[in-house]
Length: 275
Image (cartoon, rainbow, N blue to C red):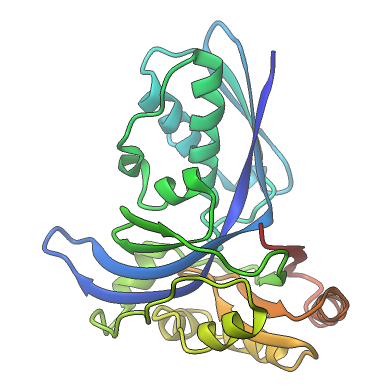
């Protein structure tokens, strides 16, 4: 018996930093969605709790109890036993919520394997784990606990570009100077691409400037995306370093991907659709 779960890449279409709480957590407003690209979690019965890792980015994640996948398993059941195989397709320190998505996928798979309900406090594993469990487009507020699902146009074409350099969320927030910014405009969702594109153009990522200061190549990547035909929105996801562009049609996204690979052959460049 093997149970698979897809750990979809989380994309922050916008991220507004609203303040710093007394407990050290940052108050955020974020528009979050998911892309049809990600890691895969496979679980099967075993006489021990065992983790194996494969995939193009297997060497970049812990292979012991420090891996969030193991932490998720022990959170669900301290004595649970299973063989967990993580297929690591997403780069690390990319702003794509890979670790949180892996934790959420592990909880989904093991809850079925062990017939255990997922506890109501998955945020103890990380602020992004609740939204990754939901895996739907939503407005996420507070420290990740306030989630309001919304509708956006379906099958949006996205090009993702990540340089070889990575940035940790902790590092970016540590260097962020302004932690009290304007709130995100109210948005009830839409299926109209025109309404959607007009709305997100008003949004921002308050971590972008700091991330560019730490990794100047990000500015070059965003400039490249903005030069592409058929693009209507460019941004950095989360704390970086993945930058992305949304395109009106697939052919424009395909051309943009080709141009990105031509200019940055050493970088992780992907084209896919939003879920």
